[in-house]
Length: 170
Image (tube, rainbow, N blue to C red; front, side, top):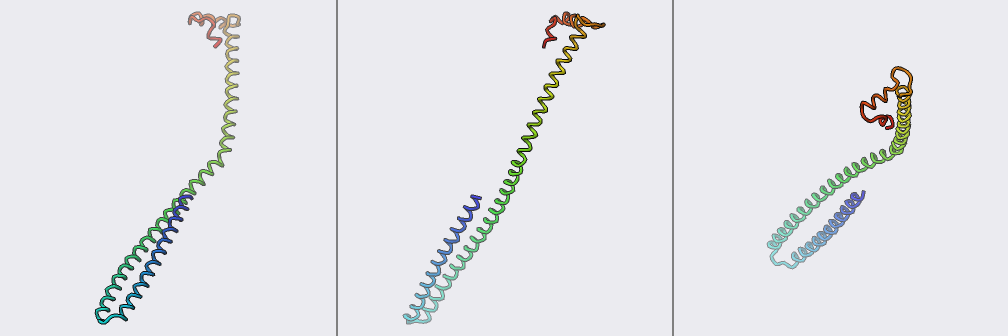
């Protein structure tokens, strides 16, 4: 929006400068017309005066026509710049709208993240509980004090591995 303001101000300054220049040209034209009028009244040879005036007017007209063409080109350039700035502003507004949508979804996403974290913590606690239950059941069934055909299997496996009962306490 700041770029749009700066462009609008620059365009306004350019138009003001062009209007000032146009007024100067109009004053100059008025002055030339006065000069032409005084030349007519003061001239002895009307034919040479007429040719001279015709030449001066043609040069001024050519200059004015060139200036009008230049002003028209500047106006077209200003119009294209304005259109480009409007397109840029529209693009920026679309980006702002998308950012606002993301910000609006932020609280929902934060809530979902907190819920996922709670679920993760619950699952972690459940895994720990199951791990402890499994270890207790292994100790109960496979230890030396256990009953059944697998009793003492832990001691035999620890002895073979060389680390006795250390793996049960991990």
